[in-house]
Length: 75
Image (cartoon, rainbow, N blue to C red; front, top):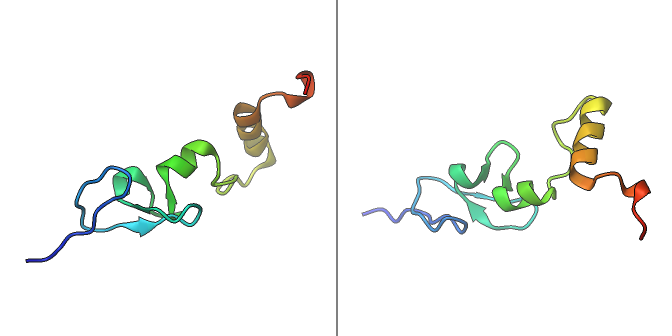
């Protein structure tokens, strides 16, 4: 009997897991991006950077959606 790997995010036994290149957690296909090797937690936190965005306009839209307009806020 073959022992299946366990996803550290959902806890399920799966056929394949990958290690997140950001945080190191082992995740399954349902819990992250296998092409970029980033788990869903890092993707949602924005820790995956702006990879995949080749056009500056798309990056600006992503940055604005993620960070908001920081110039207007008082720090």
